[in-house]
Length: 487
Image 1 (spheres, rainbow, N blue to C red):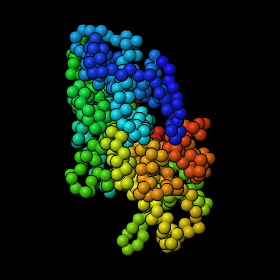
Image 2: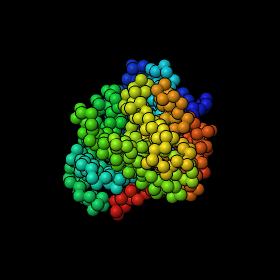
Image 3: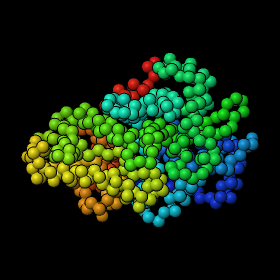
Image 4: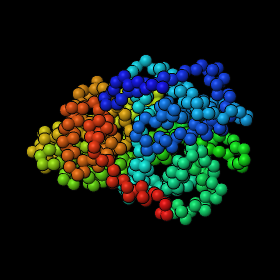
């Protein structure tokens, strides 16, 4: 099957393939020939190919993503049967993937706005590295978490899920292998290997918390069940087994769920309807610490200063000043970009409002700081001879098309934003790692600002810094802390 490349959008290659679009009755006729368990097992066997993959994965010339596999499982849950029917051949699985891609396309074509389509495609296809997600989350909830904070995240997670956070991460890693799993008979036998005191029901607690049943997968929710509960509880016991089988159609979604998803769990846990959310407030300090740890580790030739408090009202400047010679980069850190309706429904009205309350606040803080410098505020006298080269808004959440579509949505309120770039934390980690040897952080920012202003940083690396090595060395020790000591 041919893959067409009609062009690109701000550094993102656009690929178009032939899909199969069936009516509901045609879907029922096609999928009802298959045994449900065998079909889902076959679909999920492709999941591990997407783990850490940096290319477009294909099965018998049909490209697929995590979303494609999840759509295929939804179709199987809706129409396949439990009787001893046909096990799909490879050619049958190829057709299943094309039909699932057709379902994706039908959902996309419900939108008439091309930019909304681009937003939907981005959140369905682009992803961060699972290993880096694990390492980052562990650092945030341990070393970066301020000791003065009221909430202790590891304790809170264990009280919510019923098992330790490290056990959650290890159980997620163990789900990678086959695309399916059974509850462990005696998880306590793994205690010495994990370095954790696992109770007999610990794996069941993990499965109960992160799984959903077929009915939930079929019903459309925001976010979809495969995001909020990425393990499918089949509710069926395969022939020759004595336990229900669980499926993992998209390992990458599971890793996202046990890292950034845990952040949302804790945020919701402390959402009591009041304006203040204690967890989000305390996480904000931890995230600032995390960014500060990264900057200190990588920008060895820079003078790095934290926010400066000024005036009788104890007002604050931007979060970080990065100074090299007489050049200055201003950095403001925020947690979120846009929320579920904007991500999963492509709603640009919601996206615009979300952005004003997140990125917009950061832009305002940057502009206030610049005005204070221009007006000679005494507390900023150390920078009076500096020229502000660029400003960065750093987000914990992934914000795709941040420097193109999102800036366009912000423009009516904030005007031109040529002096500001928006970068997510994964991109910042890569940026800092790649410039570590040359210490050319400012030069790269200048180049992007002048020549590639609408590119997101991930696309900038892919297209123009291909030979740079991104090891994310800062994160390695945190991954090693999570891994079993005897692994």
